[in-house]
Length: 130
Image (cartoon, rainbow, N blue to C red; front, side, top):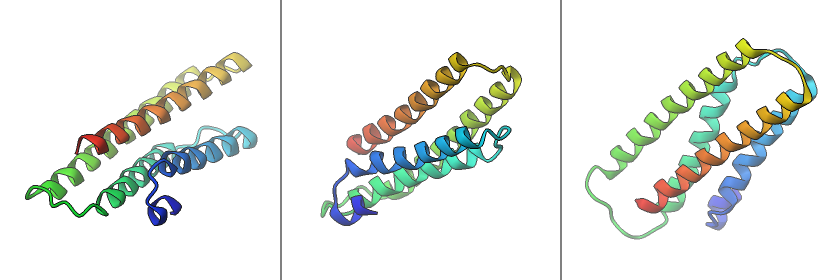
């Protein structure tokens, strides 16, 4: 919210990473079985980042091409579908592996951070190319 109010885009990835990290810490502390709502959480984080950047872009006085908003909405929707598919696939893979150990936990945490960083970087690149 502060990123949109202040118009400072570096706060967007920080906020999304904080929410995603908080959720990951809660799952790690709770030590619950696999959470099937993970794809929805991933979709929500992706939409939050995309819509925040879109709101920041709308502050600009420049007019865009006709239909640019619809194209951007379609790209955001396709990105959402891809996020759900990837998160669902990772959930199925993790359920299949189901081994225990600190090394695997660290590897999973690194993979989760890499996925989040990739999503944030791709949204920033997409925003800068528009």
